[in-house]
Amino acid sequence: MNNKILRILGSVAGAGAIVSLVAPLISFAQAPSFTGPGATLPPATNITFTTISGALCTAVAWIFTLLVILTVIFILFAAYNYLSSGGEEEKIKEANHQLLYAAICLIVAILSRAVPTFVGFFLNTGGTVPIC
Image (cartoon, rainbow, N blue to C red; front, side, top):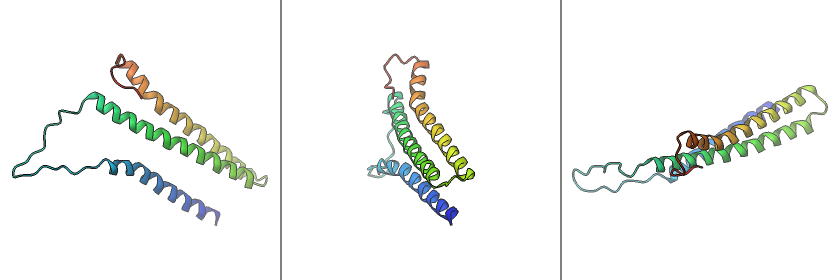
């Protein structure tokens, strides 16, 4: 019974994560308004390194937020397992593993914020490119 509930919660959390990642992309979707016979797409002259880095910074910010939320969820599940363990070694081990995963998730979140700064440093942008 407990295993089924965890599977259902995992499925719901996975579906929620997918929806939260896809929803911002859907909001940016725009239909081009080119009319007339033989209308072609204009050349992509407005795409620069600055706009690409801005998009990457936005993606990094979303990933950071998602990972911090996942960290809180892992910690809450671990706390629940500690409280409901009743002294059983197996449940205590599971809660310890969940806390370890929460720590790893937090480290990855911090690294996701640090990587763009390191890339800007190694590219020697000199402050011309916005760093997250």
